[in-house]
Image 1 (cartoon, one colour):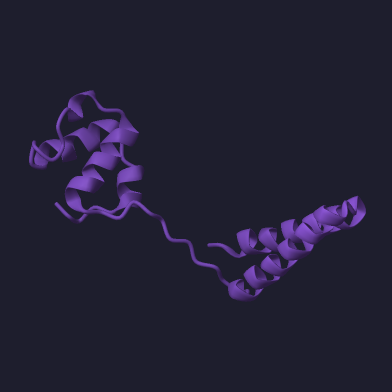
Image 2: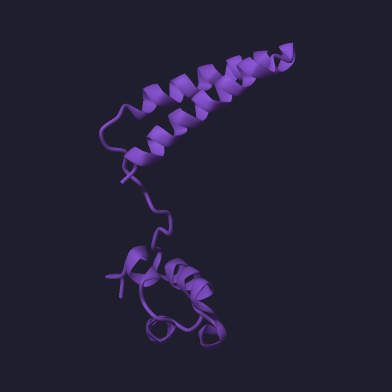
Length: 108
């Protein structure tokens, strides 16, 4: 029964999920016939102790260095906000966005 993982459950139909829930102890998954897909997946994962968090891997960049750069830019952004320097603020926000985009593009 524990041969399932979150990705497999996410890509199965509601009927198949209900069948899986019927095989599990009925106290762990009560009312499975009335549940929708999201609730079924959560109930099955809870009953089988399956981790629902999907871990993504960042490939090709130094994520720590980019996050450090983002933190530094956020400090500068706060300074620009206090100084009411709108042009500098716009530039810093754009640079933060670019750094975040780099991380998202490298995520697999």
